[in-house]
Length: 392
Image (cartoon, rainbow, N blue to C red; front, side):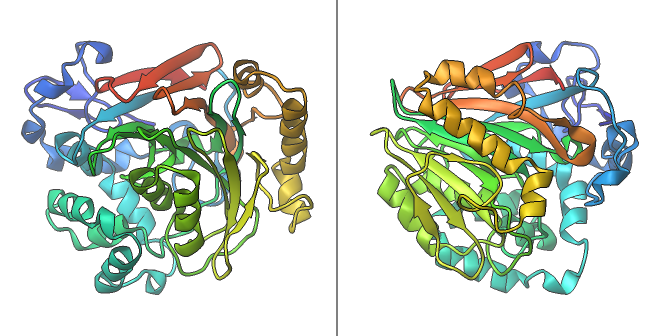
């Protein structure tokens, strides 16, 4: 990803407009940054979001992406810590609005909902999120398309390929790999307290989450469920956010997944502080299906509904490998090591199927450990905003 240079009182340049050109990123006093001084209008958004290595950001034609060897690409990841949406969230929005709204307007625009319909759906299904949503819309300057986008109702489709497994012993633990295109990754780890309860997870779509944990000891993650197509419903990142904002127990999470419509098929694995877990298969137009199986990859059930797609992502192979690890009764730490090795770890970045991060959540103690080969980042609910460079 190409970086852009902006000039607030402290000089920054980074993919989200706060990289330093002089000081090191880890030395930034993030709370002292004068966000309002950044000249957002001067940012060359087209250059900013021109994908590295010649690939085409946002394009579903993954064959257009140029291959690059593992260990050759540096990526900056940003830690947002903000109880309520404020300066950090606004900076994220300004730095990503061109890319996100361009994606939102892509394809058949008649499939996107009216603002009134999108807001009505959010209020009907997730009313607890409405105050935060309104604050974010205000921070966008009441941008019409941003307001539609932020509801995450009937968005364009996207389908990451991932692996995840939950452990109860010796303490509740959720481990996952997230496999996707580096050019389409938001690259944020977000801690918030929108409703008073701290939530930490991997950000997507500005306030959605791909995985995460909350102060109540609940942890959640998602994988694509393998069924092609989409229907009316919410993008899954806002559903993961909603679970972590409002649920404390497995049963509360189950109730949410049973009633909220989703736009595509996903496997959602949840574990709470009791150590009990489930995996839910959710898809548009059908009731959620719940299983006690604590592992999931990229197909539904034991036998894939769509064998060719499952084979492309080695979904059965990965699930069988996870089941083998579970049968060996390994500790979570040694299982986590396996997530950095094949078949769970993928280097197919140019095909939109490379492992972007591995993370292990220990929700009862509020710790998340992100890993890359040779690198790790321990995260808690109480850390400060920061950034880190990793190598894929």
